[in-house]
Length: 179
Image (cartoon, rainbow, N blue to C red; front, side, top):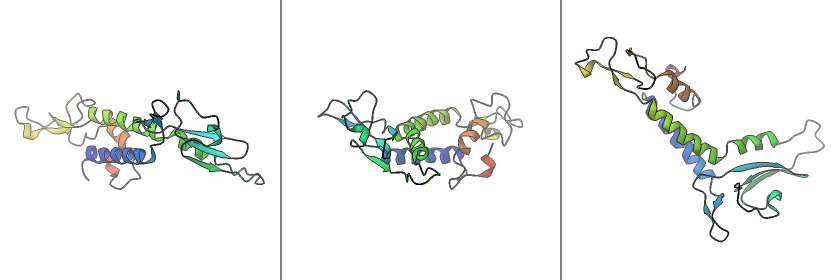
């Protein structure tokens, strides 16, 4: 795909779809009338005496059943480390990482990145060799970053290049977009 704006929008849509598919356990409302939280699940890593867990469906301010810290509420992943392994064998770093990148955070990031993308979506602008009276000679430029005369090849702007590079491992990324 040649259009970096469309390609980036597709990556954000994929992230949103995956976050929504991974979400659904977090609830809002009063007990007996709980509904899925529209903002996505919040996850929490927990290290107990026997197991390390990724607790899902925890939400600040919601009443938690007394056994929640034992992983008995919502969906969860559990790992029992091999205590005989002197190297540790702990899953906590991975669980903490997962909790920090929970669906709620991903959905907030997707929305923020869509707003950033909107600010850096190209438009036809007067270029160095453009005739101001002939829009056919205009070149693509970023209305936020490029406030002077635009040259062919100035787009994508540096801000958009920085957004794109976080997805450099995905199919369709083009090396000429790299900052």
